[in-house]
Length: 362
Image (cartoon, rainbow, N blue to C red; front, side, top):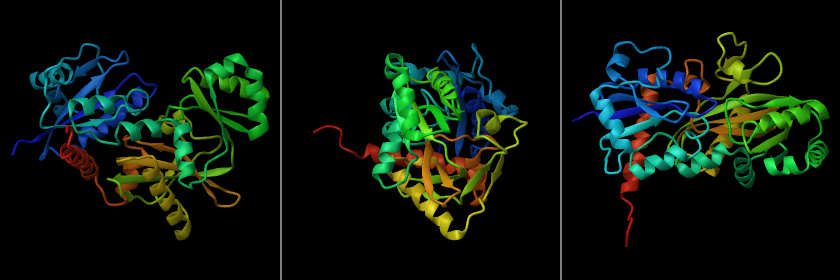
């Protein structure tokens, strides 16, 4: 039997571009060559796609896959990329592992494109990707499912421009200080600041609006950050709990990805069995409420005062660097990198096969 083409799509027009390149390197290295034929498409910061030379990548996989403005892939890679973008082109015998984190990659945009091309892809559908990416919509759906959420205020650019004083007053009255300010649809802690007073809040709101047209203000709690990795179709396997530890403040972009980071990842987290099971049950409930599929990392807050869990966010394309929590959590569960990537590719193929059985005309 011919091997299935496994295409890693990475980079993208996103603030998480560099992280995506590092994730792609891990994924490319761990594709099972006995079953799949690996390819790599780099999307540069202008949104232009480039076929990477898979023969060179096989000879020497770098720390980060290259995103070159004029990269020249091998002939098979170039033809495959042309089929993706040509009107008549048909992509067959392929599956995509899209690992463009954040905007345009994790928010449903590419998922819709792959659906139109009828190409299987790893991760949730357009719908699941879009609603999980929007922190406000995700909170609304998760709360409706009975999962506790942190008190918040959502603000759009128009409201801020028309009456910043009203926004600040409402936020302070509703939430009290300290307050976390976040872009509504970004990941990797990009654009997040903590405000301890009105002056800091004004600056934090203005800063967050540089990244998104809607932002989220949340009550800052004294919490532990507990994470669960999900793997499967609509009744996923839930990993053991992991815990992020930082010396002070919150888990910033630099703490997540810097080589000098002092953050610690504890796998498994030090939780008593009953509390760990409670968190796992909530993670599965979030997975279902947000219509997720394949993989996700569900991040929860555990209030230190009373051991109550709160939903933080769902990451539908979590990091796949060597220090990322998602692969670490499933390594603890017994999955090698190759087994984990193979399972995710199989889930993508399984969903596509199920969709093909549906009647599309009457």
